[in-house]
Image 1 (tube, rainbow, N blue to C red):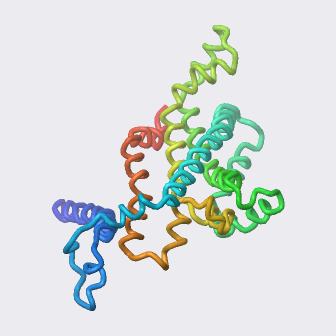
Image 2 (image 1 turned 90 degrees about the vertical axis):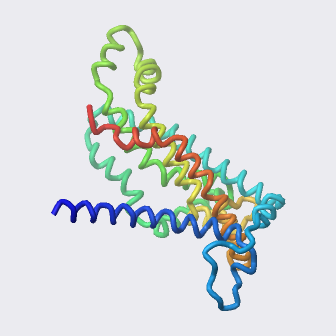
Image 3 (image 1 turned 60 degrees about the horizontal axis):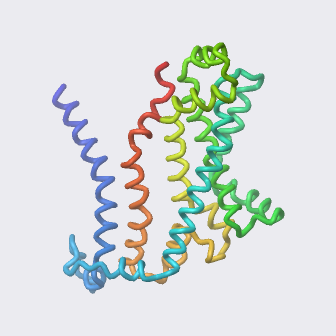
Length: 274
């Protein structure tokens, strides 16, 4: 029985690894493939390109529009992180530290933003932005991404602040610290792992988001992010170029995740032990 269970665990792990590695392998393979390795005239597609080439990447990085698209994505993603933290951290502190009347309903209202599919929410939000002049602007995209990210920031932040003993806060008050000083100098440093995780998730959400950016930008090419740029050329560009763009879209996310994974793990476990 023990060997059977172990075999099932090993098979499950191998399957999970393959599900992650195979798409990455195909993406990289096509991004460096020559035309002959893609258009084989009915013959079997080789497991590895016959003549690997970096022409697709060379083409991308000589295209000035591509640099603008990367800059747009960076501006939107980091602005979303900044705005989400400015709004979400104080809200998380207040909801995590104080048992206000109707707290459960407030939390339910916050999380309800993510209970509906994005395609359901994007239409009324786009209509609102059209009437307020935020349609086809960076501000509109940033605000919509902030709306999507805030529930994550608030709920992760609540867990981070609830994991900090109340005694620390009370002792600071006894010693003469104001609420602002206590929050800034005592609670914030202790909550950094959880808040860093919230910032990371917000960055990843904004970097990869497509539906809201598509409806709000609505064809204004100078505002295109990476996902919109990829969508705009998917029918005209060859497979190797599309794969190269996808790799460029994925690499910052992968590198960023590796660099801050310890904060992500700390943020996930925040609040589990007090």
